[in-house]
Length: 249
Image 1 (cartoon, rainbow, N blue to C red):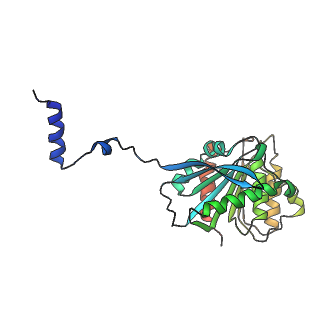
Image 2: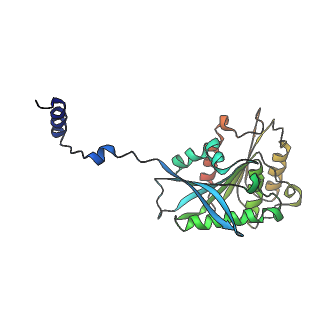
Image 3: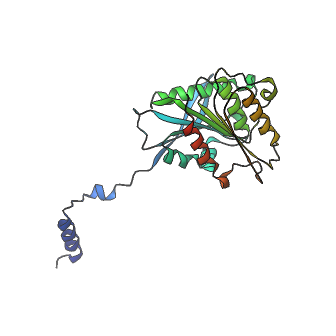
């Protein structure tokens, strides 16, 4: 007796003019992005980082890149997911790179930060060998210790970085000594008004220092926020909107 179920399926498919092979039926839907863990070697030491590449990114088409630096004790992967920047990369169609600090901390003095700065250089150079990175759209953000490093990195690599968005960080000694970057870059400073770890006055000091040297500054002080990423305020989309509006001029 014929398999009526089999014949019913064949009739329906034939009527639609569709041919389905077994391999096509089992083919999984493509992911919206590729998440990679990679490394570069700096002074003989491997430095790891997470890289999110949306599948819409084309190697030959100039693409924005965002570096995200985690807070003390964190990891690049946790920064990507906890802030939602991994999903933001998809909707914004940019490459996201979130490195890992040695021993969980970024250098925030020039002497201790040189290896981290060289790591940034090495990662950017490596990514450029595989993708066409828009030289006017290299952006940097970070949280806490990572935000303080973002301040320092931008001052040292002002020819490369188009704009930064430090969240809950401090400008440290440069608030008084001066930033003295060779080029001006826009800065989006975000800080919780109730931050118990880094008082909000440090954010105001950074704002004043940048403005006094001619940088464009967007300043956001968030009431009732402590030392946390402002997810409830939609800060990640705000940062990307800021970056999108401020390519290198």
